[in-house]
Image (cartoon, rainbow, N blue to C red; front, top):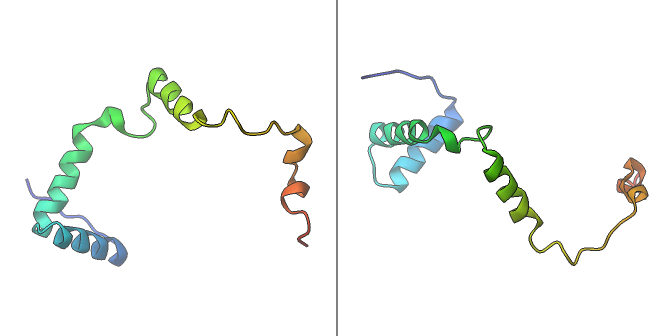
Length: 85
């Protein structure tokens, strides 16, 4: 099957550079990207299982046990921009 797509100049340059870096023809590299994207729809963002979501949260939390507990008042807009203005 042959398809045509329009890319921005920036995307085209990046695609060409990535294909060259891998020593692949542009068409073969673009096809491999499409095949890869179609091969695993369950791994795309937005399709997380509950178990994967919890695993992701656990990974983010790892190592945070030693962080100080801050009062809620520490998270005001003013506190982030203190001294600027």
